[in-house]
Image 1 (cartoon, rainbow, N blue to C red):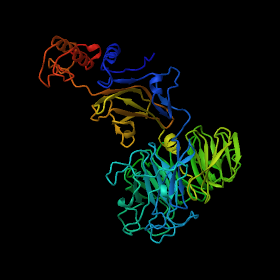
Image 2 (tube, rainbow, N blue to C red):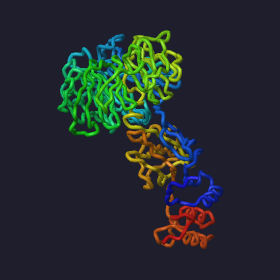
Image 3 (cartoon, helix red, strand yellow):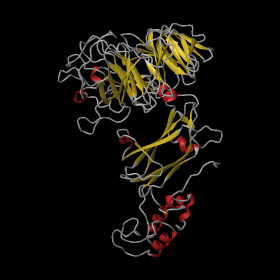
Image 4 (cartoon, rainbow, N blue to C red):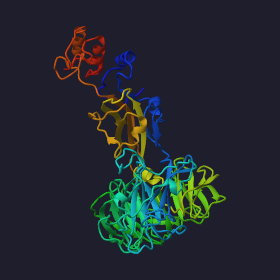
Length: 609
């Protein structure tokens, strides 16, 4: 029994709701739908949340972090990014990050080389599943220092206005995307920039240069986009290697919000000097931590601000390549170091006796690293397992953790291989194809964004209103919110389930009137935790169709008096628009009485004060 909540006013008491539900088909009238029991929550999709509390019948965040069942693998040798399904272990789409294939204007062929051309390598995934990929840009004359592209998880940009989504698809269902299954991209005006009208794949929302977008003069060669991470506000921070600077970039449209932020320290403390950005992650306090491809760990605070001030610090003596966050620490590959922000000191990662480049922390706080072999240790250094490269695999420059907490090792090879291991035992789970020279060691699955930067999980459900064009009235819910936590609800509706995914979600205000329609209503409740992993609790959620008033006596409420007045008029023929004729058939019947009762303003159809 749930006693620790106030559900607020309901549209109708349960017994009356049952009578009406039995009297009318859902195709005629949809009743409010209340989700509150374990079985109700189980009818939706749980992603990072559960209803396993001791008393049950409520949603809260998982204690072991998870993420999306997709990994975004940058293919540095061919200027593409692969969308890899980590459940089916197949590539389901591939997107161009620069002009191609060969024969398209602006194409720069460098197959097999990860250090020429656009050469994407950093990918990040936000809490909604949208992916961002950063081109580094080598040896292309006056090409820009870095180009960021956003790829939508859902929906599309209908650039040709035909109402259909044109995008990369595995048309022959072989689990590998080839050139014919990607949309081409050409530099139509020869300006060396990806312009909006040159993007053909409609999942690609935008492509913008950093720091100046697509409007300013081209940047000199050699600055190199080599770091990208997502902040607590959902916007991006992009680091240019030779410029020794970061820029804050809008996730909405790719415009530069602020920058440059120099990596020269401003904290007035002893430091290791400025550093070259080489991968970054942002913690829940909004602090950016940066690898440097050297011996310096960089730090920028207050990244949630669009204007600063930003305090910059650096700490030396830590050889690094990859970077990971977890357990309140910063972990660095190559040197196998762990940095404690509370003391500003570093030490060896206990028992991480393996050569590393990539490094990651899984949903349970275990550290995984390796290059020619792979090793997993607990936070205290207890060895979980060690595994050699799989047959057909290659040394890696990246380690990722998928939605199952299994491990993906990104093989740096022209054959394009992802090697997968059981997160529990280290047992080999296979070697799978992606694009040429995969080179990804950033937050390619969104694990850090969802569990460290912005602890979050979602529950998503689709409710069938029963009739095409169903008008929806409101969404209400009851929650418990510890400090610095929240529950956010969003919705969309369409006359088919398939039509939902092409639409953006709209944010709901608790109990506020809606203006959308469609037979199927999809609602997503997002639970946002705090920095200490404290979780909000969602007790219940109610989806209500739009019901027009049955205020016969004009007192601004629908109550038992109005129901009685409708009942007294049974048998009368009335003109169109008579409020008593609830089903608009021109005659007052018992059906109108029941429909009016459904719209009572207070529980049990009490008389309004």
